[in-house]
Amino acid sequence: MSQHDRTHHAKIATGKGDPQCFKGMAGPAKFKVGERVRIKDLPDVFYTRCQVYTRGAIGEVAVVTHESPAPEDEAWGHVDHSEWFYIVRFKQKDLWPEYPAAFANDTLQTEFSERWLEAV
Amino acid sequence: MSSSTREQVLRHLAAVAEIQPPVQKTGKAPYPTDITHELFRAYTRSPHDVGGEMDVPCEWTEEEHEAWGHRAYVTTECLAWRGAWCAEERRRMQNVDLGTTQYLGLPYYGRWLLSAARILVDGHHVTLTELINKIDEVKKRHEPAR
Amino acid sequence: MVEEVSDFEALEIAVRELSIEKGLFTAEDHRRFTEFAEHIGPTPAARLVAKAWLDPEYKKLCLTDAIKASLAVGVDWLNPTGFGTPSDYTDLRVLEDTPTMHHVVVCTLCSCYPRPILGFQPEWYRTPNYRRRLVRWPRQVLAEFGLSLPAEVEIRVEDSNQKCRFIVMPVRPAGTEGWTEDQLTEIVTRDCLIGVALPRPGMTTNIPLPVHQPAKPAHH
Image (cartoon, rainbow over all chains, first blue to last red):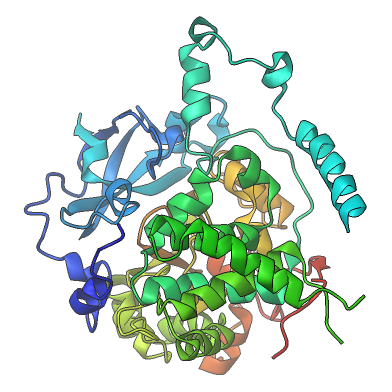
């Protein structure tokens, strides 16, 4: 971390923005809108932005958002690899056992990098 | 003044006991077989990941922040602007590395400030010695005259 | 007279002075970013919604390229660094409410928020309490803010946990027929843009809440 080039991000992102500066780096997206996916329960030692409350749940890809380094890598300044990111939508009743049946239409959506998703 | 420092030391030792988790009562580390899978997960979780935890209805409030808090926010963004770190490194250091006790116990911008201090040292931009000496010098600069 | 400083103040001064001494940023950088931070607020986001209510083509742009749509309300997400603010990124998404769907935003992991177009978060948005409860008990939390919706309306919680940033585009309320953009902008409050309130004629302020005052406030 100590010797890294502090001008690197400004060089690649000026005029473009972030995450736009990572566009094209992740290759083809593995999942598409409408696909059902399950959230993997990978070990979350030291750092994760994949919320534990989503682990093992099944949802539907709502939006394919952008390419970016995964936060688990970016949190240590590693930006060489990018993944596709997806907003996945869940029915609240599938997340919480006590969610009232009266509100069966309620949903929740949140965003995942590709490593956290598996096809159902 | 040596007596007020000694008083501070004794108050500190009492305060530390207040924020220890109850499991430390016995004063020795637990045996590995005492740590179930659930406990392991709870201890090693990312403290910022609070979604779905139990809590109670509270009075919602707004807060106007201390001037130092606004300045600390700007400092963390300037450190990222000029490449000392990126926002995700800051979030890791500020919201997870601090650990649950500091995470829940410190003011919001207090954590931003601590993480900014941390990246100066972890990023090898200053030695801890330099940081200690600077804090000491700033405090002395602001001591009321005796 | 020399003023005593708190532990936090002393550390803030030390960190800023060391950063500048070591060339990590300049005093001018700090001043420029401070100025940027002092001038952001919720009006541009409110105006984006008002414009979208009045212009179907602009609404489409808001829903497909909100960063581009932001320019029309004076917000260039690349400011002030040329590549965006480090914490807010440059991927804004607008969540369109319908008569049968209402959105509400939270960041359970920290307090991610679209600062360049909406200003700073209210303190309650940053609390572990809001972040713990909104994702699991959204109707209860919304009721505490005075918002109760019928069961037929789907409540969709957006947990903003990565680089995307979100504002809610509420349904244009009845009683605003013939209103100007300025009039509509006035009733789209910050609370409406987060999703804890619905806009209505005559409501031009956020829900009044107690405000904790600092010991040493910033002077503008």
